[in-house]
Amino acid sequence: MNKNTHFKRYLKLDVLPTPWCPGCGNGIVLKTICQSFDELDLPKNGTVVVSGIGCAGRSAGFFDLDSVHTAHGRALPVAEGIKYANDALTVVVVSGDGDLLGIGGNHLLHAIRRKTDITVICYANEIYAMTGGQVSPITPHNTKTLTTPDGNPDYPTDIQSLFGYHNCFFARTTAYHLGHMKKCITEALKFKGFSFVEVRTMCIVNYGRRLGYKNSNEMLLNFKDVYKMNDNAEELAPDEIGIIRVNTDGHR
Amino acid sequence: MPKQLLQGNQAIAMAAESAGLKFFAGYPITPASEIIHEMVNKRHIRVLQMEDEIASINAIIGASLAGLKTMTATSGPGFSLMQESIGMAHMMEVPIVIVNVQRVGPSTGMPTLPAQGDVIQCIHGSHGDYFPIVFYPNSVAELYQYTIMAFNAAEESLSPVILLSDGYISHLYETITPSGDFEIKVRSRSPLGSGNRHFTGLSHEDSLPKTSDVDNYRRLITRLQEKQQSVAQRYNYYEYLECSKDTDTLLISYGGLSRAAYYFKNDFSLYRPIRMFPVVEEIRSIASRYKRILVMEMNTGQYAHEIERILHRNIENIPILGGRIDLTEMKQKIKQKMNE
Ligand SMILES: Cc1ncc(C[n+]2csc(CCOP(=O)(O)OP(=O)(O)O)c2C)c(N)n1
Ligand SMILES: [Mg+2]
Image (cartoon, rainbow over all chains, first blue to last red; front, side):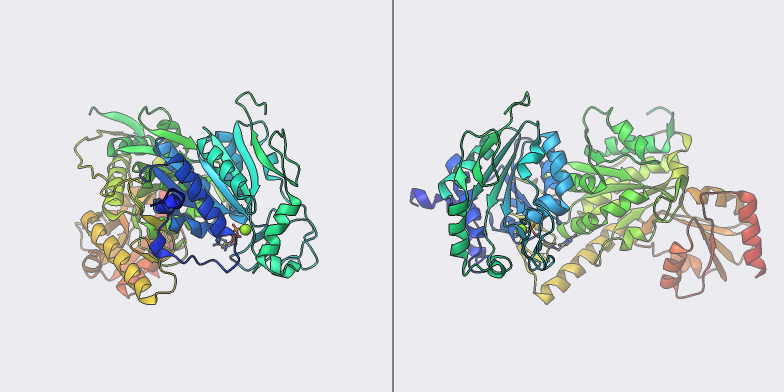
């Protein structure tokens, strides 16, 4: 096998295709996670993937590793139980923004507090995609969704702000910035402690289409226009991507 | 082991340790908290106080899949929160033990008087069809014994097993001689991190989600039901005290309340289920010897309905509500029933 296809060893190729719609960004994230696994040469025995419920949550079943597809919002406590039971395992959570920040939001606060040594990859598509396109905790203000026909009255959760002074790793990246995404995920996996990667990705069918995007490529190119890389930030502005590490003493 | 004066909840913790418990996650709630208080002092058990009962049950599911024997303990409000994940653990076939020390409900009820209001929730609390094994002891010695049974049944069935208790027996102090003389079952499945299995709450076959294959779903549910039934049959526990006098009445009670029901052993025959679910088959032949069946329980008739459904005959129920176990009142209620 030639080197740049090695990431495929982490995938169950025979169970493809995925259930995702044409134009969905999830495949890009799934592939990049596998590339990071490959870069770190993570042993297949010894790595466990855990997900919640949603389009993103279905990722877990495509890894050629032991994986657990938990109830909606519960990936984090299951993953923490696994890690505390066997510290030698690398435990990776893959799930959606609604799953991790909405129904599972309380668990996220406490996983951060416990600094459990796991890595979370959040497929942040700003929407509850699987259920047809309802508002999510990170849908922007004024955006129309199925449940906010007059525009979202609320402002989105700033995920990074949840980490406060805790010793954690937080990164924001997008499905457009492939090299950057891979770097963020690889660094997160290397981080000893709780690490969280917010990957901005696109859902054309249940979100972008209703906002006037003609196709998913337009959404992807929008990431390029909106997000600027900031690699030395203390804190990322809403339109910045980069990595934030908080040291043990609470300083960034 | 020497004789010891133990509280019910202490006996549960001690037995869990003997059964090989390695991981406990829970959230404080009276009358179950002594269990986590005991656990934190045990050297070889990892204990996590989680943010809620949903996190607790999910953490023990994860730790169990990772290879450890795991347990959580709660009371009604926490048990309600756990329901979705209990169904998930049945679907994924995860062995865990859940202790529910019942208190008066619904909702916050009468904190924290004893009750038996969660009996049916044990088998129907989560959505969909699943077939849990449920034990309900009635003494400190039995709490010890059936905690070990619960762990064994969980390993044998690869499913969540429920140990019911109530504020009365869990807070009771009795002298027991904890026996080390139990067979301990070990895990038959290899832990996470040793293959490419996919554990999912979706209908599935051989690690593959099958969300629209009707025949496969039916096969899956049938297999799970038969498995639960066959494991349960190895734990056919009940107590039957035949009255020395001639009587046409069988009085059924269980858990904390059944301790008071022993008072009536010279008037009626007594039956006490210990394996509450699946309902022990022997009840059919025992019940057939009696004209009247009274079920006295600390709810409005949950087990009475279940017995009625199984026996296809009229059952009279005597609800003892609000956490008060008072012999004078019980006598009166039984007398009233007999005169009806
Ligand atoms: C307890 C519960 N409530 C609701 C649902 C329905 N549901 C399934 S997926 C989902 C939203 C998922 O959104 P997100 O996590 O953002 O994932 P996405 O589909 O966008 O990838 C909801 C509400 C459920 N499965 N379980
Ligand atoms: Mg989403």
